[in-house]
Amino acid sequence: MTSSHKVLFGFHAVGVRLKTAPASIVEVFVDPSRRDARMKQFLARAAEAGVRVIEADGARLAKLAGSAGHQGVAARVQPVEQAHSLDDLLDELQEPPLLLVLDGVTDPHNLGACLRVADGAGAHAVIAPKDHAAGINATVAKVASGAAETVPYFMVTNLARTLGELKERSIWITGTAGEATQSLYEVDLRGPSALVLGAEGPGMRQLTRKTCDQLVRIPMMGAVESLNVSVASGVCLYEARRQRLAPGRG
Image (cartoon, rainbow, N blue to C red; front, side):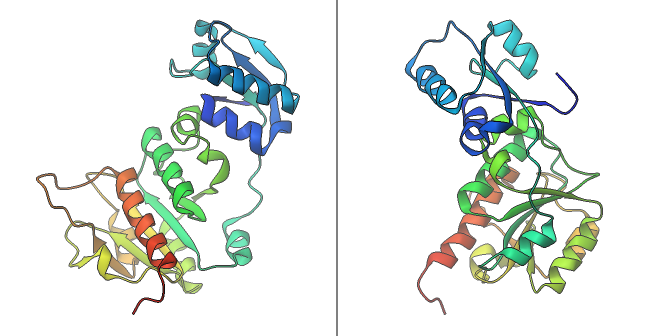
């Protein structure tokens, strides 16, 4: 595998690449011992796309994927370049931006789940600091179930500065904190919004917190004090989406 190629694995991650950018797929590896309906459907899609398919046993697939969770499918692919910078993306939007900002989310499983939620809720991008975050790798792509291919993920050098630039664009920065006095359900998220979440436990870094325009809390009714960051991202993004879909509020 050349240094320019990366590996995707699992039906969702490889399937989305087949759907969105089949020309970028170098070759697909499948376990011939798996002959169920899902594999047959996948192979039909690969044949339709004209992609080279190679049979490989489970051990070879696990080595390729770096994981035993490959589901019998892996692919070598060329990277699909981000079509936009964050500025370009924001310039081209035809609706109020909805952004997810992750500060300190270093676990690839959490990042993958956050990307999946962002895709489902229609967030326009996910933003994270380069020095304090997970990058996109095969595990992230697998957990994201294809969303790593569809949701722009921007890793920025200075998160506080980027948040300041978003504020200059009149994007309201809403951070989440357990001790905040306002509930998520008390704020208006219909306008240009960036929702900032920190890693479970430490939360946002102090400078990130100071840069926020407002802090909100997710009401917690039970014994636990916090939610996993991907679950919290889903709660926040879907509340913003609910408000935007609701008939005239206020």
